[in-house]
Length: 258
Picture: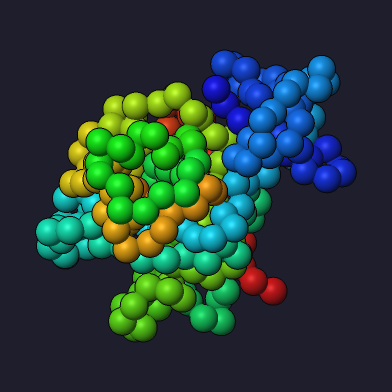
């Protein structure tokens, strides 16, 4: 099942997207917290503005260096345990929304195409074999990073957490094998990343279990599972598209701050 959050100019609503990704059937309520029912109203994806499928009320947990090839290209070792960092929910934007590069603060911004996991139930201290029970679904993320700030600050809060630096979308896919999807990122139409989730150092179940040992996970929390090799710099005026088979495409233009 694919669940989209969208607007036609009024308040955001949710809908079920068909297998072709073209039509949306509106539903009542918020699928994360309420039982949903079809309203009988349908529209097409082209006629609406897709929004970020979830705005975390609590937190986004990023995972660093979870692909060996990416760690190597950045000159880093693969950590023995998942390397976690937090991203504020104010960094989230939706498909098609501009990523704003604050040019007065950074001149080296890069893209990172990632599979994102959305938590559906409150949990704490769970084991990997229990992880599937707390997953609501999956979407695509671009873990945008200001590389110069990442190196200069000595920690990643500002580099990865600035406004608009966490695009999510285009919708949530609830039925997916997270260890069997390709992740392809294109910069202005040219392939930059071509990876596969099977190459994760720590799989999705292990990441959820590890995060839950430190944080209580709440419905709507998002876990970014790491990026494969091929990350690169992006300038204002360029567009980044991330394809994950079985989900769709997340596309965002990059613009300079005024």
